[in-house]
Image (cartoon, rainbow over the protein chains, first blue to last red):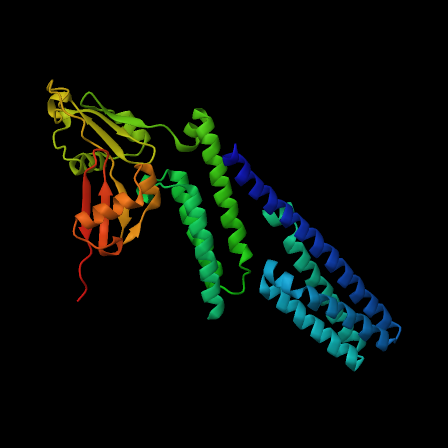
Length: 126
Length: 227
């Protein structure tokens, strides 16, 4: 029976870890997207200090999770998100509303791409 | 550079353990599905070894998944003959009583040239001497000759032969004493030391190979003296 149990257990473990990873990344990304949207809302009300602070908090959180994401996600996608965080931060410092809004939107989309790549969906499988 | 080294090291370790867990079959004896598995695994291992933009896990997870699936497939194949036939197919008789089974040849897309090649490689030049030629599921051709054309065995000749075949146990391998071999043969270290000295050596480190069979016959080969 061990000839069945061992590979079945390995497959179950891999599936479990994959699903748990997808859940964690989805939850993290939802938090970061919410922060980016909050930063945009603060910027729209001309509260640039709050916008910068919120964006910095999200980026620190992202940096903390970066080693794990590096292990499970294509590095190109992470580097694109890194670049967009830096870009949004730079426009926030310059208080350029139009550019900041565009950059924040691209960042949110890129973060959702990172999350989407981990999900077990028919779209991803096919 | 260091990444390539470390990744190669890790993937090699995973492949070694995985292939070892798969069993002892040689490449030439792989079933078609096993051959495909080996090709897939080698490709999966090669990609993260070269492309550092891909996480190592992207190679490791599919490899472990494939190996686990293969083990499950083997398990179900052992449990069910029907499942085994579904996965591996059935052996096909290509020659029966010296007659080529043309429909079987066509079904297996086995050409006459391939059949003649295979027979020739097994030392058969006259098709009429073949009673059966069976295409096995691993692609090899098993050829059974008519008794009149096959080498005669002592039994067929009505001769009695003494059963003197025994499997020698290796007791010293390149200077290392094999404790399991000693235990299997019910021998001890003192017997081994006596035997070593009886063959003109001081200790086991001077011996390349020492075996003993069921009849107690000892084969002792000393190491060459390095110049």
